[in-house]
Length: 308
Image (cartoon, rainbow, N blue to C red; front, side, top):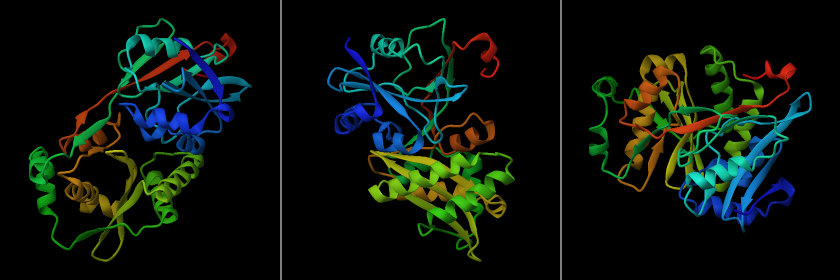
């Protein structure tokens, strides 16, 4: 298998994006413009004339030692191909990762799960919850949990309303405060990355900010949704303290589902390993579409303790 490594400046962007677009496992995270906005630097492993591609996002911030990492707001990368993502093809790409990358922490995509066992790799399966919207809303809602139905029924008409008029700056400002209140402690780099992605998606007509307000016009919850092909991707969301008390996020996701049901779409909640968040996503009838996280630590012994 002819696999070559190219630096970012040597990659033919149109061919790279064409491969990602036409692959069966196409995800917005792997497009060149997305990678350019979430990573300081990335290279690409490429098969043939861009028949298959795998981005390698890297830095050398740890004592000038090259490491591959998963950037913020990029749930799944790995191998994208117009051919079958077979075990042999995935293995060939993983084996083609240059040895100069002494530490690797990367998340593959949902069609990269058929991989060989490697002694060097620590493999972890992670959840991602998706909901099929190719049905009338009434059928989709039949899959809601009893508790979710009860919560939605309790929301008084007119007590909450949804809009798309929230600015990216205001969205990030309130998201930052909500995350701090929840003790998430995300670094500023996360929010700087988020604002770049939001503006790029809005510019391309590939995203919307959905917000929920109460009757007093107080912002209660919001979500930035990327239109990723036929997939609605819940990239970032938050709920304020008032929003929690009014079940605003339940209301918001139900409104998005109502507006997009009976269309050729999937609602991708972006999974969570936090039990309560996962349970919330599953309450809408979402099913798990897992992906893999791979880690390899070949650092010198005196650096190995810095990465686990």
